[in-house]
Length: 212
Length: 212
Picture (cartoon, each protein chain N blue to C red):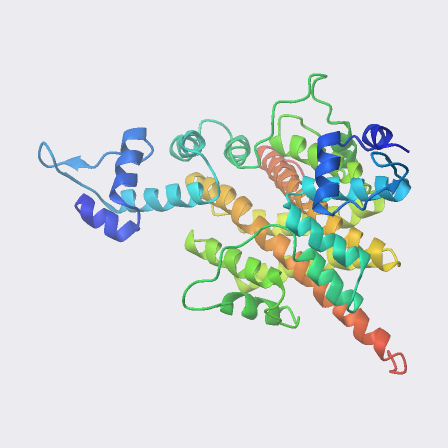
C-alpha cells in the first residue's frame, strides 16, 4: 500500500508517520521511485504497537528501546521481558543523595517469599510507594501486605499463564498488559469498595433481618 | 504554637501555610494580637492531611471539597465516602458527544455480581480503561475479568474491614487508602510477574529435576 493508504488504515496522521520513519521506530517501506515507497502489513502492525506504547505514556526514546527488544531479543526471555517492562512509567527521579535505600521494599518482597533484586525498576517504585503511604500516616502493615500480596499473586499467575509463546508477541503482551490492565485493576478496586460499603449500609439499616 | 513553630513542626513552608489560610482549607489560628495568631494540634493534623492530598495530585479546589466532607459529613457515610473518593485522580475529560456510553463497564460490573451505578466516577474510569485495552488488541476476556475481580474483591474486603469508625477518620482513610495503596498494588504485580517468570525459567533450564 502507499503511504496515504497506510495513514488511512492505521489512523496515524501523515506527519506522525513521517516522524516515526525519521526516528527509525517505523521501518522504511520498499522504494518504488525516488519519492515513493510501498508499505505492508508489518508496517501496519508496527504502527499499531507504536501508537499503543505512545498511548500509555512512553516518550519516543523508550518506544525505540522496547521495539529493539521486540526485534532482537538478545538475552533470555525473562531478562528481555524485564527490560521491556522497565521502559514503562512511572519514571522515578534520581535516587536520593544518600544512595538507593530500598529497605522497605526489600523487607516487603522477602516477606512475600520472593527474591529481592534491586535491578528491577519495580523495586524502586515499591519503595517510593511504601514510603509515601507511611508519610501520610497509613503505613503498610505486615497483615495488609500479606492480603495484598496473595491477591496480586493470583492476578500475576493468570497474566503469565496467558502469555503468548513467540518471543516478540510475549514482549508486546508483557508491556501492554502491564500498562493497560493496571488502571482496570485500580477501577475495579474502587468499585468493589463502593459495592461492599453499600452492602454494609443495607445490613446496618435492617438489623431485624435474619442474617443466616 | 506560633506560625513559625507550625512551619517547623509540619514541614510546610510559610508561604504555603499562608496560601492554605487564604484559600480557607486551613482554619485560622486564635488571634493574640493584630499580627499574631497561635495554632494548635488540629492545625498540624489538618496541614498533614492537606499535604497528603496535594501529594496524591489533588488541586486546591478538590482538597477543599474533601475537607468539607471531613468536617461536615452531610449524607450517609457510604455516600460521603463515595463523594470524597470521587475527588481523586484520574480526572477524565468530558464524555463523548454521543453521551455516556458505559456499556463495557456495565457488562463487567454486572458479570461480577455488583450493582451498576453510573454516578460512581470509577465506572467512567473502568469504561475508559476497558476501551483502551481493547483498542491496543488485548481486550479483557470474561475469564480474566473473573480472575481479576475475585482477587481485587479480597483486597477491597480487607480495606473495608480495616476502616476506622469515626466518620472523619473513615473519610480520610478512604481517600488516602485509595490513592496511596494503588501504586503499591501496581508495583507488587510487576514484581510478582518477575518472580513467576524467573521461576518458570529456572524450571525450564532444569527439566531433569523432579518437580514433585
